[in-house]
Image 1: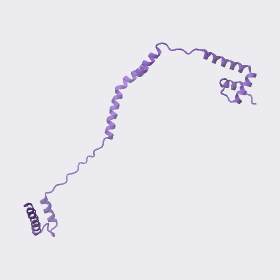
Image 2 (image 1 turned 30 degrees about the vertical axis):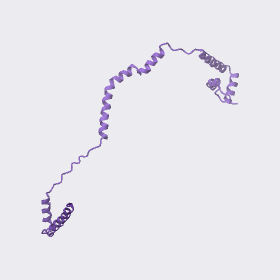
Image 3 (image 1 turned 60 degrees about the vertical axis):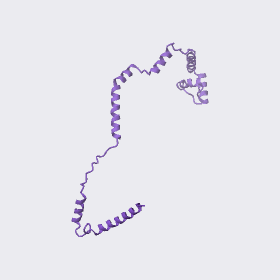
Amino acid sequence: MIELDCEQINQMLSAYRDGELKKRDMRRVTSHLSVCMRCNEDFTEIVRVREVIRSIPDPLPTSTFWPNMFLQIREGSPSPKIRSFYRAYQHTAWGLSIVLLVFWTLMLAPRKVDDARQQLPVMHPYALISLYASMRNDQPLADSGSLRYAIADRGRSDWDNDDAGRAD
């Protein structure tokens, strides 16, 4: 069995007292404590200190502790330094947030493209016909009127038929 020196044993004494060591280490510490008077005294001191600490009653809060604590929580009052910091920079923070909001709105707004289309020149129909006729000398725009009269005659006969049906 490997012997442990006193420094290693002292590091394990608290865990030994709590029963947190492995079985092998527990046996080593037990055998070392039975031989080494100095480590045994250290272990006894650890046990006594723990007993003294456990015997000390928990301090009771004063009668004003809980009401004051409740008020501080409800008010959410930070320390005076933090309050003065908030007051000093409150207007700056509001201004910065408004500027950021406006900037963000402008960046996300749909952009209107300046789509000013050039107005195309408008030609009078007679000028358009004259232009077409001047460009197409070989094919006149309209014949001497025979087609126009044929359409007009057909239209009259249709009207005549409709008028006959209305007379009923």
